[in-house]
Amino acid sequence: MGVAERKTRERADREHRITAAARLIAEREGWPAVTIRRLADEIEYSQPVVYSHFENRDAIVTAVALEGFGELAKALRKAAHRSGDRGKAIENVAMAYLTFARQHPALYEAMFTLPTSLRFAEADTKPELKDGFAALASVVAPSRSDVEVATETFWAALHGLAELERSGRIRKSARDQRIALVVRGLLDS
Amino acid sequence: MGVAERKTRERADREHRITAAARLIAEREGWPAVTIRRLADEIEYSQPVVYSHFENRDAIVTAVALEGFGELAKALRKAAHRSGDRGKAIENVAMAYLTFARQHPALYEAMFTLPTSLRFAEADTKPELKDGFAALASVVAPSRSDVEVATETFWAALHGLAELERSGRIRKSARDQRIALVVRGLLDS
DNA sequence: CTAACTATTCTAGCATTGCTAGATTATCAA
DNA sequence: TTGATAATCTAGCAATGCTAGAATAGTTAG
Image (cartoon, rainbow over all chains, first blue to last red; front, top):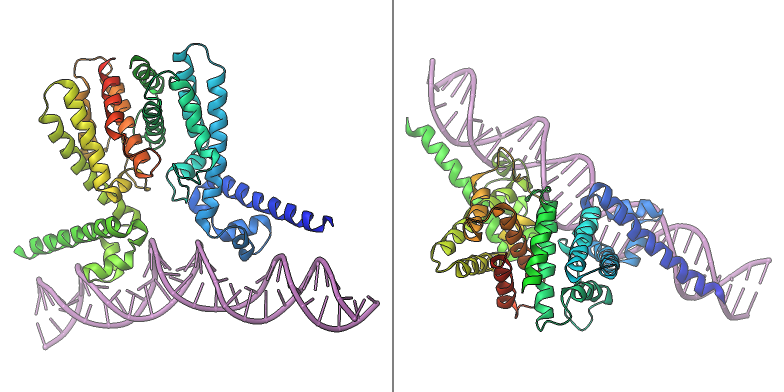
């Protein structure tokens, strides 16, 4: 009775091929180039098959975004882990965050600026979404009373830096100095 | 010979009616509802007339965004002006920034997340784009040596807060505490 | 092994979009 | 009044997201 198993496995494979193709095309040519027809071509099936996996285009973006959150969390955890003093830990995590955003611009776009159906701070919030926040919180300062507020602010600063850098609105050259400022701001308080 | 003048005035009026309609529809129903057909209907002309004013849809978004930058700069200048000590000034400006973003979400979206042809830090950078930055810089600390870096970081923090708040990824309740943290971070350094 | 049934996949099409070529109408100078 | 120019419109193209209904493949019962 391995037939059913094979079928579900094949379906899962195909689903993964869709998100992988979406991500690749987005990273190479931008999200507008990610059309259902293009994805259908890529997996060598017709359009309705794509819709048997995802309700609509946004759902595909959402799936990619979720992958992204998982990977970002992993990168942040790694950076938090190999850390000396607290300041260095914060700096490492900040660098890791900005590097991630810079190296996967389309992925980051899916995670933060494209319309997705991802809900935060709710009952059904996916673990991928919480993990990244937790990694940030771990270096902020486990001791201080306002960990959550401080983490939110840290996150906002990083996200803002990532976005303004990506859109070319702040100088690329002064990145390290800005990170230093953020780190100092978090330490002194 | 007031004919030519009247015509250019009428053209300018019509152009303004286009961006005003775009902005209104975007604010009420979101940017995807802003279609060329809809705008043409709104100004009671046919589609090609809209294209005689703007090269394409993005150019309309860009025009709205530029208006937004002008208004944001004005709001920030106002907040910077009525200020007591330096900490209060920074706080006022930060509050003004976030209030602006919250009260005009679609406008803010045009300014920061939708694709526009706005270029920063270049020769042809429009004054509206520089003014807001200048208003931020004015409260950061005219004395310190790293004004530009500090202003960029301040801006990034505000932008990050605005975006994460808008997308519901950080708690609305703790806004004031986060602002306090940003202000303290800027003061202590 | 065949026939019927079910699940899967495809073809073909709809409505909407951004954008434009070419016809049509209004405007104005000679 | 006529002819030329400018302003505007009609009609249409190609591309998009999405879907109904036909066709096919796969599975099971007799």
